[in-house]
Image (spheres, protein in one colour):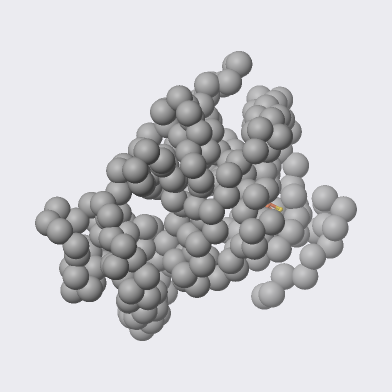
Length: 246
Ligand code: SF4
């Protein structure tokens, strides 16, 4: 069985949401935040694979135009406001990265992590080569940045560490969590203890999916869940009543 990292991550957030999306195949509405995040990611990919020397700020804005995803916005005014915000973020990103600009070693590199009875697959955002060392970079655009303690326990960061090892045969020098919104970059080395913990977490998730354990997991994430209106979690089925903002 192959499981993408995004599936594992969703199951960890809420098994019932996983079921709605992947088993029942109930379509979700396109979200402005998803479109915004993907547009920024694609712009950064173009920035770090610029064909000719160091890109200018105008190249960067042009890459944003080429990468912009229009779906998910409720009006052209909302879309314009998100795009303005994207330009501001990319202006800061440009200032922070232009002086030590180096082309990426790889972008969106496919990986597979083989475990006993299943495979985890996905794509690594970016790998940089500096001399004889390598670093993996994961870009985020969320408002809520992470602390170094949170990054050290982050499933995705540890997954990219294992993904790199599965491709190159040795660990990266560091895995960097880069919040493009705030400009904060946090680099960590994943320990062998964390590797063991992550592998056990993968096994637990795979076993939950295979044995069809799809309980609701109520939390703050429910506020942005498209399945809220059909979810029994709304009635506090999972044991915790929550207050919805509408
Ligand atoms: S509303 Fe919350 S509990 Fe229900 S499916 Fe969505 S994330 Fe899960």
